[in-house]
Length: 184
Image (cartoon, rainbow, N blue to C red; front, top):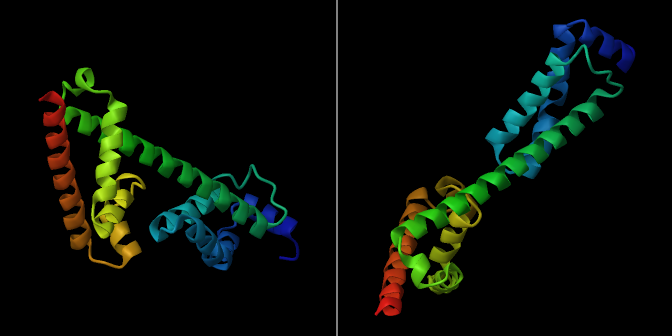
């Protein structure tokens, strides 16, 4: 093929060989772009596959001048979409965690303002041992899984799970103690 326009025409006509050539030529570069921003190889692979699937499904609708530019831009848009989804998931997880904490003591809302409890909770989190606090914050505030935390900190998943359990037990104990002081 001599020009991008010829390639676009062949692609629009369903040339699978051209599509396979594009996939082979650009897959790795697109994966590196996605993985650089997402820092998650599985999600990065999905993004690249989704871009190529979209290219194939829309081959008759799009007029592509430069395949590489088109594909890199498409990957960047998909990366942004994934980042937004992850941020939404973190927000939802954080809200769900707060709802769960509120369920521990259902009557607390009429006794003490939630803000004061949150302040005390954050103070207690700050008092956790450094490694335990860091793991707990990655888990609760950053929304990372135990596996992601273990990879980030280069420790075992079991250590991460133990530290999260340790933090939760300590925080539950301290919060119960503080609530009894408020009620007593």
